[in-house]
Image 1: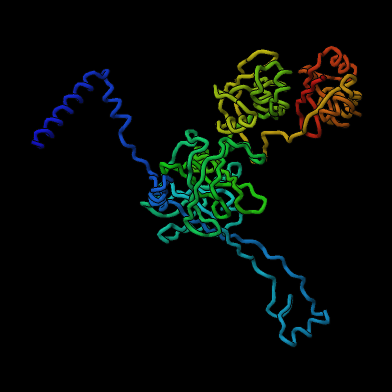
Image 2 (image 1 turned 180 degrees about the vertical axis):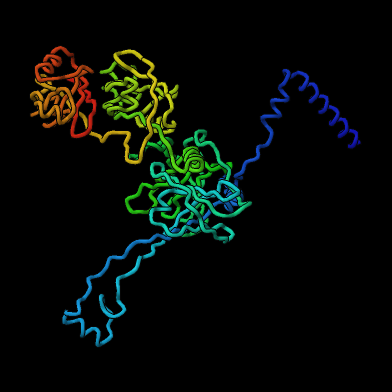
Length: 487
């Protein structure tokens, strides 16, 4: 009897299920199956609901390496004792070694040893790490795998601007990492670092992405990934993994007041590193485009002064003579809004965008000039090792009479020395001029994009202007636009 009831219940349930499916809209069942299909995460969850990184570490660990570097430095030569020195014969008789004594010639070179991390990116032995790991003067670079195999490495090339180095070891069939897309990573997602902090091989630390596209004061070519992953000396050059086991960055720097981890670490996005790797293999060096301009940030005051709807782009403060920018007709006061359609949201983005282009490449610049947008085509020069893309910061500057500024016209010798056609030498500041940081010795070259040749002309321009000004100021070898607002 119970068997008949159970059979009847199955039949009824099947009939109900068939009726429900028939009543569903077309394609619903397929969509339901797709959304409820179990995913295959690389990182599983433990019984406490926390991520378990064990599987990820086992899969990627063999491609993470320890890098040992021996560098040579000359020991300082101690002061030698002359045979005429009264202590010379005394020390020699008692067999005490001393500089200049028997068998005590000049000291030889000192061998220093350092450690770092890296990871294998090709089965035939290419390894990525930081440039500062394989510093100048190295006499030997050794790569050690997790299985204890060691290989002497050749330094294929380094790039100091991005802190990337490419090594090559003589081996085949090596384990390699998978590379991901750093752009798709999100602030707040889990990441895992592997490396050799303080020489402890294959140490694993985890955390989250704290911020993206961080610009550090010392470097404008790398949009760093900021994390709270524990990074210490020896981690440099090691990989930063996402939860799919893909490398999205190379651990490079930390912010620290003690030399140890303080919760802020920076990684170089993997796409930046791969670009450097490809150039080092193809050309043996890194080639970067150069416009030949000095730029500054567009803040809210400057945006209003120049008539921009929002503070965006990079303001050109100076054009280098005979540069790509000068040949293209760019001017001080132009605001670069985009390059080949890629928006320049912050001024710090422009050096990277231009630097990613090859020399002799023609680029289309969207600029803001005299209240309208224009398209200018420039053919890039090549960035060399000593070149800089941004001028040193000056702070903010200001203006005259109603601005509280006194000054005089430049002399003929001063214009010749500065390489300008004219300007106003600031001699004293009060009021708005002092408030915005104008200093005696500053030279005012333009006001609201109008060239200033002498003090009388400058005074006239100030009186004709309203309450917002943009001064082009030269201080030392640098030029900067200074927004001024009179309340």
